Length: 426
Length: 170
Image 1 (cartoon, rainbow over the protein chains, first blue to last red):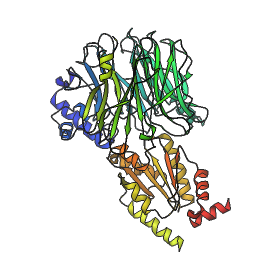
Image 2 (cartoon, chains in turn orange, yellow; image 1 turned 90 degrees about the vertical axis):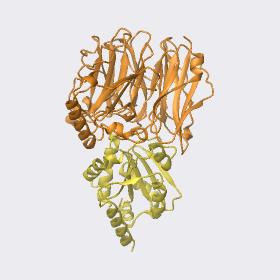
Image 3 (cartoon, rainbow over the protein chains, first blue to last red; image 1 turned 180 degrees about the vertical axis):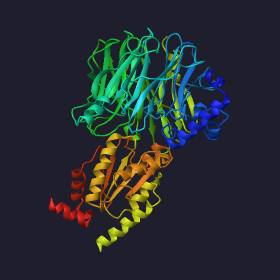
Image 4 (cartoon, one colour; image 1 turned 135 degrees about the vertical axis):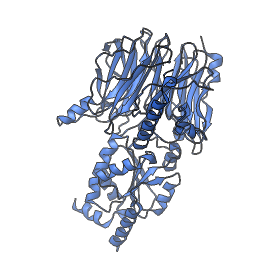
């Protein structure tokens, strides 16, 4: 592994640079609230110069199962993006491999974190945002491994505009045919408008793709102007092996509802359609992005949060590639701050997750539908914590459904959803 | 006399921030704030990572210059590790001497809940408190000067002397 072959001198140098960056540029380590710290007693592991950090040092990890059931995780600590794996459902992890020899700032918080996806051959693709000198600026970074995570390519910047402005909140996906797609919130047009003395509201949604395994990317293309600026963007692949992107958009002066775009081909995005009509009119940062899961039957399952006076809370909605959209339904307890929804679908089965807070403890919830989201089983609490937590993420190894939940107290864990394990249709 | 009290309380605020660091906002801080405030006040939640917040701080900075006795509390939802950045930014808008706080390292959910269980973390988020503490109004999104002045007009009992004059002049 690359991490193992690194000379100790280099390791020390990197560590010192990392430590310096950590002190001077807090965005790298994001000692943010709650989930930022390692598990009790493990903090030494994160700062010990002779040890590589562990997943518990990271504030905002991502994970995904390979086709063979190996769990891969991407995360960051002290200026490095790391990847490691677990063959025992997150009980133990391999030694992490650093993707960037030169430390850099890495966005690692709820809405924006390193992402990891695998293609059908097990090649690994990782992306992240590196914040630049000025506030709200950043570049989208990418690295890949074609040798099962033993080594990674030197990271490249994916955005082909290098203005000191925002290219952040990227979403990453890989198609069955090997194409790699990245979409992100881009402020190059806003930057230009400001220079010319014009107003520009929000950011824009841009994307690019690679058809050579991540060696190179096509020129960036704009999908839409005036997206919301600081909510995560989500991509999933449809039944035509093309991406579908969901994001929070700005309609009219300040209505922040969700929009979706599907593609006619890799190079041709379709016309964006408005998904939610909650009419949340707000000149603010919700920091609360949506989720999307496309089933193998071609249905788009969506979950989002809005906080308009009349229509607020968490919503679920289904839209088919060829069928009418369903009426959005509320889920979770608005009065208990139900937030950060995740959705996952398989055939006609759909799972939702979210978290709530009762003043003392945070609860992790799941809810299951066996009939494509038409009706839902009773929601249930699947985990609790008291010292702060990361967002929950639904992932699957095609046998069971898990929720990735990193909590300050318990660290990184996978919580199996029993209901799903018993009933999952193969 | 009112002006004197105001002056003293302003000096008090200044002293609290003389160290150049925002005060640590803990899960019992809001309760204390409510108890301590004798005037109507505007509490603004903001973050270094929120572009519209910066716009709003700029408005508040200008308003503060115009009405130096405006009773404001600024609470950054960033981590205390970013206190220097917070101070630097507030200084840019001449807001460093007003009552300003930063979220402590307690779980962010708990801190938000201590203020408002129905607040999901959207920023900027403002809370107007009237003098009697009988009314609190929450607003998400950028406030403009008119918002602030008109609210103060409604809570007329709470309007400081200089502001009353300014409102009458309008």
